[in-house]
Length: 347
Image 1 (cartoon, rainbow, N blue to C red):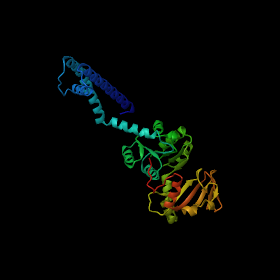
Image 2: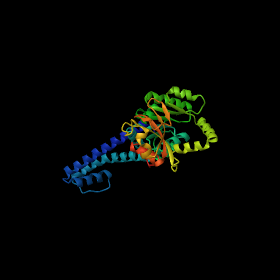
Image 3: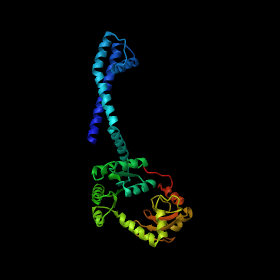
Image 4: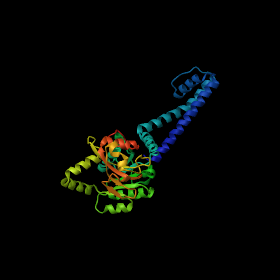
């Protein structure tokens, strides 16, 4: 059933309920006027008359009024009950209400990530971001994928990501990033084109399954393109040549290895950072948090690896730190950012 049909049925149900309410008010007022009874008794008489379940001792005027009320009201009551009951049994109205509720939440979303496709790659990406407490919205047409998202607690829409209106409904205009990982490369290119056209400031990640598609995705407006097959090949080579390093980095960067003592994390220095504008030695990051800064990325994009203790940390810089998980969490929580392992969950 289309959205237009559901809206039309909802309006029709609203009209029936409004007419039923007017008839109820008319009945209560009529009995109070003709039978000279209180409001509660008039309500009882009206309900009994409309449902034709209770005999009453009425005056002649009251009996004539009851006949009129039954003739006009019984059909309306039966039609309203049948129509609304059919909507509930059909399930379309409940689904429509659920979509309206989800859309109302999405209207308040900001700086979130939209994930198009909840396949093997999309599920890993969504679970990883969700565990780190980042707000995400998944768009997928598959009913089983959407049901799995809802079971996990991830915000999701069962729609076609190829349609611009669906991306906009997911909050594309106020989103921070778009992740397109659907199965077909042509669909990924189209989603990237749409995302870039709607939001020029959007950071777009895309998946390329075939050789040569990377260039098309970059031209379409993607900021970063990843090929799962190429990445898997590189991972295999690194596991063969540098197994210990690969194992450490994979464990440190993954939220699934909650038992690992050391983690690798990045932090953008905010304006309110107490150590902004100071050197690494004066910042006391090492002494206060027992964390090692292995690299600094400046606002202009330049990188400093293995910075000295006299290197300055500026506002807007991004530092890469390695240290115990709890210490990293403490540092990030001080600036209002949550990380995996603290029980934080996404919206």
